[in-house]
Image (cartoon, rainbow, N blue to C red; front, side, top):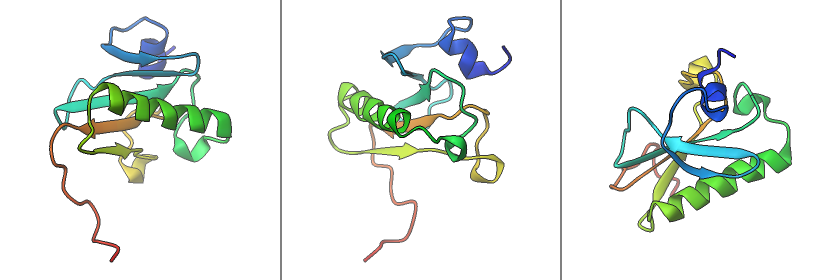
Length: 113
């Protein structure tokens, strides 16, 4: 198994796990971009969000991200990012969501007002 996230899910590589259920694993990012930076991954290999076709798994990932944010006490707000494929900035070929918070993150896009 060469996928680094599959190896973390399988216990071959260490990670600081913060949430786990039957479908999802969440662990701390090794190179955090915010005081709280947790990756949420499906336990089954899915290349990216573009390939995700299972609505139940999609819901499990979103619910896990919200659970992580609550556990991290990010009541002031948090950001959920899914970099998708090469042009979207995805660096690991396994679907993963970034939960970031713990400080003001600022706007990424112009206001929709």
